[in-house]
Length: 481
Image (cartoon, rainbow, N blue to C red; front, side):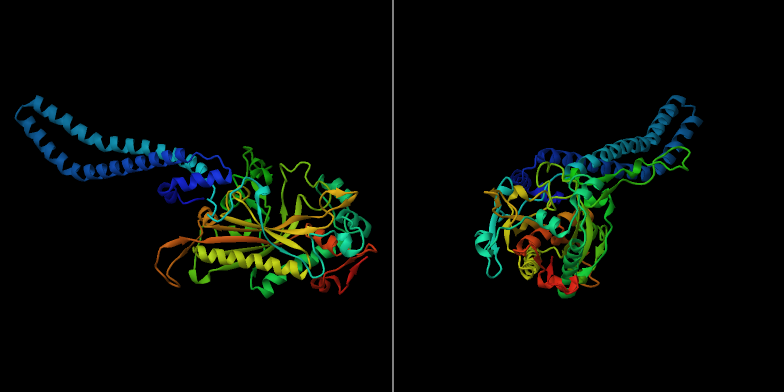
């Protein structure tokens, strides 16, 4: 969620951010609702002050007027006494009137709160000024390429390796690494079953990535739930935008067999599409110790994505699937832009080191404004070279880069939604509480990463050379097949 005070102070910044990101949000309507709410709150406080003042003064006034009424009655001045009694009755009724008007204002404010919150949740974080402006992934800008020694992804695979590359679908079938047909039979389209060395390689990749981050980079390993409440999805910025990508468990509609009244039990739940949801949600509604920052967290979790809107895209094989496993890195740091930018580069560097160790060609893409999504101030995609991908030329694939990682810088967008803060001023400090900054990046996602591993390390005889860092997790073997 964006900072409402920042929106009031500089609405044009957020209007420009919406335009650059392609989000249709009526900023003026939000500001009008906010102004009306603040006006109602001011009026409510004025009424409370008036009510308090009257209640404080009412006792002495009523006592004085009561004495005057009795005196007039003793003097036989009934008309004057009756008039004064009406004045007393009016005074007694005034606090009740203020209370009723205050209750009306409270009800109007309460009615506006969810509407205003819903609108604010839809306002995207403005992109950083150095992010290139564009409308889609087609406008992303390549900023770096890396090739392993002896191979150049810009040249034909066959001319460098001496044989025509097979795509990963042919390789997994020939080597018995996956059973896509039985996976589809079991769970529908975009499903698969890893078998034999395919499952071993999958586990090897995850173990290598997890140990790389925890043992070599000092990240804390954490297990997280993959079934979460809606609050976690909203808090991390995956809802309301992106709701169509999540699998929904309507637990609130389930009725208990022991419930005679047939009332629904529990809250709706959602399957997470990334370990980022669990890692960030852990510290929601907490004030962290500034000395503990930055928190460097890493998890491996099963991820679920409906791939809504991806009909006809990469329907075969292991590229675009509904269920996969991912090692995710998250950093929660102090509210400092320079520190956030530095962590962004470091987190990308970890992934580069892993891909280079696996000898997988890759490139870095600076995402344009239209490809950032609502929650990112900046995002860099890492795409791995896949020789079996791309359009075929005379029956031979030309090869293409495919996204395997995505590194995001979010500043306080998630932490504000999650109400995750730290108290400035160091240990035991008494400074104000400040919303943290957060960043995330894929460490490895499998089985998608198996595609560049298999296709880049395939041999002419149909076997696949196991990258050296993965061999300890594969029983020391050097080849599959």
